Length: 343
Length: 183
Image 1 (cartoon, rainbow over the protein chains, first blue to last red):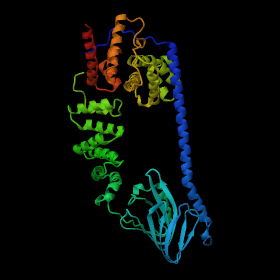
Image 2: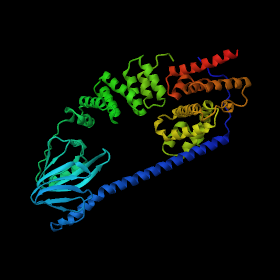
Image 3: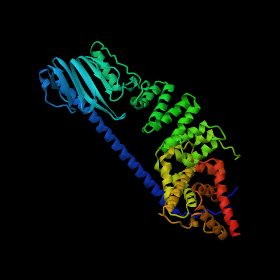
Image 4: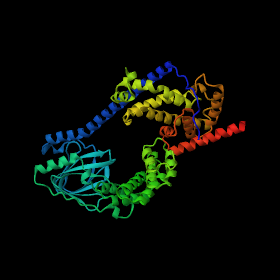
């Protein structure tokens, strides 16, 4: 075995060089701190602008609604999102302030918003406000908020089975493309809004037509919705179902951009929650072969090392050390698969 | 005053955002960092860049050092990994024809008073190191030239001890082959 060279003198390093280097490091750290502050400032400004953007329409709307009377219902301010309306009977349509619409008279109407043409509302002797369109950036979904003023409203959506019936005083948010929001998904804002609605009068019937589980149905929708369905199952602690849905999603949609994340998540669930090592190994191997994200490949490889008994794990460990020499799971990998050689 | 404080105390102060403590830690460990980086990459002017990058990384992640006494080893690992990345990049650039090979500048490896025979041997060793994989080169330099133990090399490179041994052996075989050819 190679021994260190004996009597090797260390190289001379001048004091001036040390001083120069110390100063440069200090400068770079200061510059980095300045950039961080600037980024933080930008982030705060962005957040303030976003908050202003979200709050402004509501403020305007409230102001408009407070000021208006029955006579001023014909206010001419057009809604930002112009709904297309097909009507029958003697319905009269009036715009109310910003993004608000009132229908009066008798008959029925079918209304759809340009922003999300898949939504429609069938109204019978009903007055409805299209309160606003909410862009849910985090989930990358558009939601439309309805406020029912009087009568009964039946809502239908292509991806929801059955229909939703709302009664006067109800306020709901509906995500586009999803069958239903679970309770966990509703925002605190919504909860507060529901509470305030309940305080105002007798509790309205709040039946939600539960859609069939997308995973129970064949066809395109299964592949589209299984991922979301799995997330709900996972949050509810139904890990077996979550893992099955995620695995099915990967098999059905291997080219979907969410497939690698689905595979890794399924592997983790099989390993951590269900103790199904073979199934977990299969998922992590899928990531190693198909995932373009080195971060996820690193996690998958580390997990595979942990799942593989010695001495077979040594080859995988070596691969991990070669591919991810500064990997975050290095210690775990070494602990899971220690050296077999004597030190 | 700060010169007398142990690493642990300086580290606590540096974590609290005291810039004087960062400066003191930098001045204390710069010689080691420059020596290690210079020995891994003696053929280029990259040494100072490597060390600067390593210190900036280190001071940005001070929270991950738990014990002050471990600071030197932790910093050395960062220097080594930064240097390893730089070696790999240089090799790639040479492969693509963007860089030329340079002879090792031994003033970054040993003192001026070193034995001429030893210097000649080092020159040959570095010529071989130019041709071996980057990880092998780093392991060999840390073990044979920097004089670290196998476990210290393993810690600095983030590899297992058996991997380190294999890497050192591979370079050693190449060096022996050259010696036999000369003999």
